[in-house]
Image (cartoon, rainbow, N blue to C red):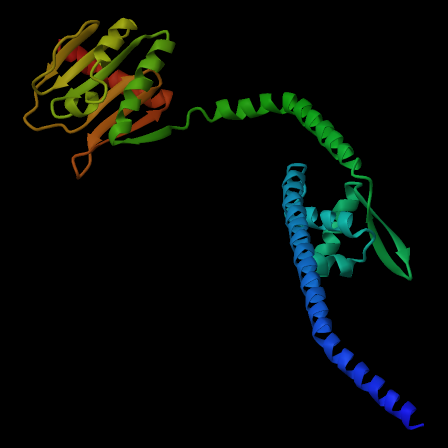
Length: 305
């Protein structure tokens, strides 16, 4: 009996000692398991984040494409949400895209009108579902048909618009130019005269303005002569010389005249200097004003003969 008790005690001591030996190993295995789990979680999290980023990037691309089809930003976001979530209530969609219910409902109504979304009732609630995205082709077809109809209507409307445009032709159109843009007046002068049957223009030339007007177009006279455009010049004050295809008469003036006036088919240009001695110009496009200025010029021209 004593032998059995001693044996039992010995076995218990051995078991306790063995468990003590296993404790570090158990802790080690727990540590290894935890590390593996953490590594797995990190990898899965990275994959999940990568997948989310990919989805968001693609969704943004899809939304931009949908806008080209006529979707507003909100309509596109709700449509994409329905595609992702499947059948959804107004509340679910509103929360998903972070919009109020009224705006969401309006967007859903528009999507239904386009035929890309429908709904059914379940438990007395409306659930919205996206139709096959192939329906987007129907939208494009419908838009194409509308554009064709508009194009046909334009054939009837354009003559009326042109009539209005021509009826308003007597109203002056003024264009302003500053500094280096003054050269555009000379370019317009050449282009207008070249296209006109009357390839001639008239100028009131002033001594103080010539250098400013032709500074950025020093070959103007050569180009004018090459195009066969003639000019009559009333020079106010001294200066000026003949360059070809031009006639010049002088008008004596005791005071400086700071404005250079060009009278060419249908237009009259005025070039002067501002307070900072910078050239400024205005071109008035109006047949009536042109004819009046030309009449005055012609009479003065004859009186200087």
